[in-house]
Image (cartoon, rainbow, N blue to C red):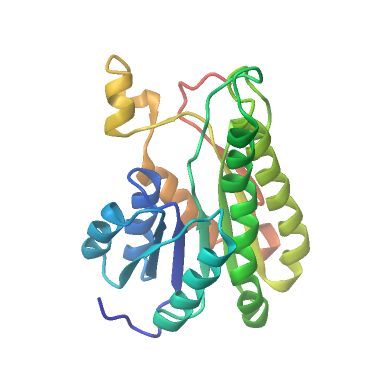
Length: 237
C-alpha cells in the first residue's frame, strides 16, 4: 500500500499470529505505518493487506546481513523508525542433558543477538530525533530457569539484561526502552487446542498486550516504565 510520510513508523520483529498481529493492528489504528518482519512472508503478506500503510519484509534476525538489508529497505520505503517491537517467540523446551550446543546457541541468537542487531539499526536516527521507543517482549524465564528451559531461560535472561543496559544508556537521549514480561499462556488457536478445558480468563489476550505497549509509548519521560510484568489473575506466580 502507499504510505503517508507524516505518519510514524512501527517495526514489529516477529510478526506472527497472536501477539505480533495484535501489535500490528493496534499500532495501525493508532496512526502508525507498520513494517512486519518475519522469516517467512506467507502470514505477514496477508496481514499487511488488512492494515493501512503496512508492508511485509522477510528478515532473519540471526543474520546481520539480512537485518541490514531489511532496515535499509524500511528506511527507503517507509522512513525512519519511531517504535521498534522485538517479538520473536523462539523457544526450545529441553533439559540441559537433552539440549544440543547448536540449539542452545540458536536460542541465544534469536532472543538476544537478534535484539541487539535490530536495535543498532534504529538507535542512530532515534538519538538524532531525541525520541523513540524500543520494546522487548520477554518472558518469566528471564528471571528463573525451569528444568525444560535450559536454552530458553539463558537467552531470555540475556535479552532482559540487554534491555536494562539499553534503557540506562539511551534514556538521556529520549529513547524509551522497556522490557515487557509476558507471564502466562497467550490466547491462540494452538493454545486453545492444547488446553481445551481452560476458561477464558486463564489466557492472556494479545489485544490487551498490544494496549499495554501503546500505553508505554504515551508515558512521560519523568515516569517511564523500564520493565513491566503482565499476567492474567489466574496465573500462578
